[in-house]
Amino acid sequence: MRKTIRDIQKMKDRGERIPMVTAYDYTSAQIVDRSGGIPLILVGDTLGMVVLGYPNTVPVTMEDMLHHTQAVVRGSHEALIVADMPFLTYASRHDALRNGGRLLQEGGAQVVKLEGGRSVTPMIRALVGQGIPVMGHLGLTPQSVNQIGGMRVQGKRAEQARRLIEDALKLQEAGVFAIVLELVPTELAGEITRRLRIPTIGIGAGNECAGQVLVWHDLLGLYADHLPRHARRYANLSDTITTALQRYTDDVREGSFPGAEHSSRMNEEELREAVRPTESGLSV
View 1: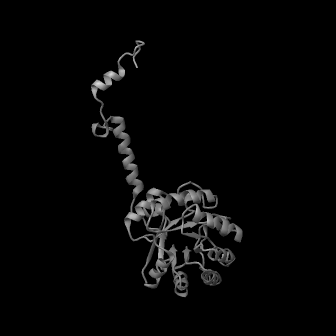
View 2 (view 1 turned 180 degrees about the horizontal axis):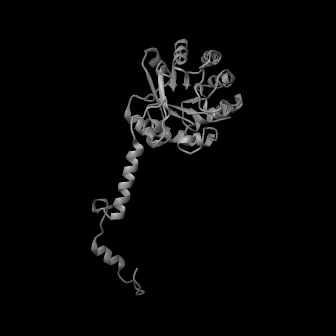
View 3 (view 1 turned 30 degrees about the horizontal axis):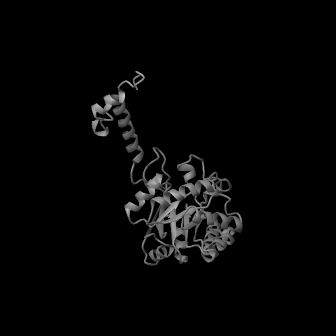
């Protein structure tokens, strides 16, 4: 049975740490389900970078998000599916409701996630008021990378830290069921977590959050030479896949693949019948 936002809150209330991972397609969602114990999947707009090859998340569209969310939903039957709302798709209440509704109705997600603090609370209230659960996102907000000036830690100075605390409380008041804290100091993330009733999910925010999220490609080592400081590589699949492709290439060139065990045979009489001359005297 698929997890709900109530299940996630109960985990927080019990003091149970909450693991979350991104996924972008049917196969990865199936693998998350088989692994057991991961209650949250984020279909992140990070797909712009790790799947589509964009330099950041800004170019990602609603159609991109719908396409990938649908695939993840088809592959998963247990985790709660959270889908990112792309850049400028929640600039107004009307936009937020129309696009948030699409992610649930067409995409099949159970929750939408949007970035920002007090400025997005009217949109959050509109969404929650119409039965659309919302996850917030504070700290580094990648859709604002051009305004922030790069992927930098947020909240290191007192004034900025105070604003993040206030924003977190305002998001909770507006109705979000959880908040992602990205690239904020450990101490600040802990302070925010202790002040909230709802779970915080950290990424580059230390170990005092209620849960953690990692990007699929970082976790599995699908990038050959890039790993963000805040991530941990639990496998090195880039090397594994490269080796497998090299072995496949060698086998094809040497003629050892496909072998008899990978092929089917035809009865010789049937083959002779198939290629015998026709009434016109021509062979097939």
